[in-house]
Image (cartoon, rainbow, N blue to C red):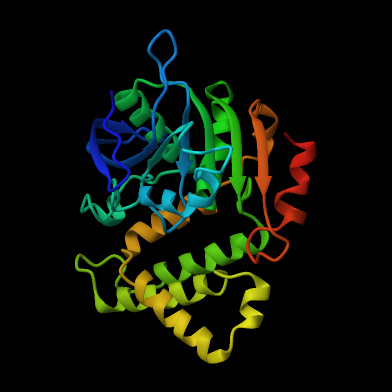
Length: 292
């Protein structure tokens, strides 16, 4: 049986990982955690696995944010299902530009690469080529949609929250502005990580903070509260490596699977809020009714 501690994370090393562009990395670390108990079919395959794909700034431990969804009173209770949460490609807890020391020489990756990274991990560690379901939030929703479009026979249901099937309009302009902040810096191509790059990350996180709460929540805060919350958010985000951030942002800039949505076979549930700044029912949920 598989060790299934609820606390902490574990590591696995892929002997090699090939990117969609043909580049290969050796000895690729994968961080993961699990919750619940695996169940097996008559052939010994796990048949109750649900994969969680985390947000832009998350990691495998972000599954803790889903306590209400997978708690004991929920239909998706971890008592009935086996949740596997994997820190995505490009994040320092797994394999990223900063942890490999490759910085701007790290292979350019796509959302599909992030999916294949998890698929290879599941095959090696759990001997799985199919899962029961996939949950995705934010950029994790990008992964979930991509998984369901590219490999429609590998999952039975799909649940996506606060995400979309493409980067366009306001999201594209925001991501492009963040990219311009980085590439315009004289220090980006330097060998040493300069104080200027750290300062840019402060500015980047201040911009990201502007989308962190709902419109209504922002209106209910006083200016003093907004300042305190922003300072805390920016301080926490300032430790993010600028190369890790840029590669992650680049993957979202190129993301568009609209023409593949009709491939989805899984039962699909989409959640969004009309009060959200970044993902809206009008542009990111309602159009799916005629596309999936």
